[in-house]
Image 1: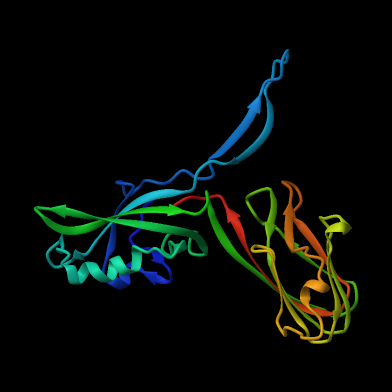
Image 2: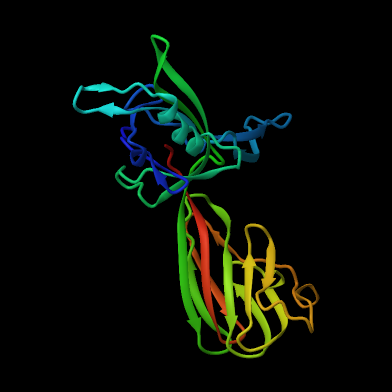
Length: 271
């Protein structure tokens, strides 16, 4: 992949005066994406193998070489400790995966990877002139940040969300629901059985709930003292479901409310 710049944890490489020199040792290289490991077996006296399971076998990874190019001299500047320090503090972190984006790459500006980076100095003649970045993602593909906001104006009103994920199956979502009326809030998804419906009892008007399907956490924002969330919630969480031919998820809400939905949709592209 040919890029000059990237964004990590909200800051651009170019803001430090650096640019990319090579990617995986080659300006035109790319990383493998969505490698799937299939578990199969051939039953006795059968001529074909049977698929039993599959999983993504490894996360995305790549290496990037960066330096501080001097346009006047046509060479890369030596990186003194004062120049190295801000970049090392930014990239070489111990606080988990951070968002990584390629804003200048065609079609990639709204795609995110979550990565950790190890940094190795590139030396020539005993002096540092660049860094090699070993970038490892937390999954085998990119994600697109999706949002949807809507209002349900009557009881048992419906709203459709299309699951555009490149990966067939379920995608957890976070739903923020503000009730307009009192009652029992039931949220159904047409792609799931009624037994998977979300139920919150003893809801009062203007009460707000955060239903985090990623981390499986349900929050009553008001934190009512008269009744605990755990005593009126059935611990079902929102999710989107798709098949290869059908992406529509029709949500039904038992009482009027306003809803904000956010989710990370898998996009099977690499660095």
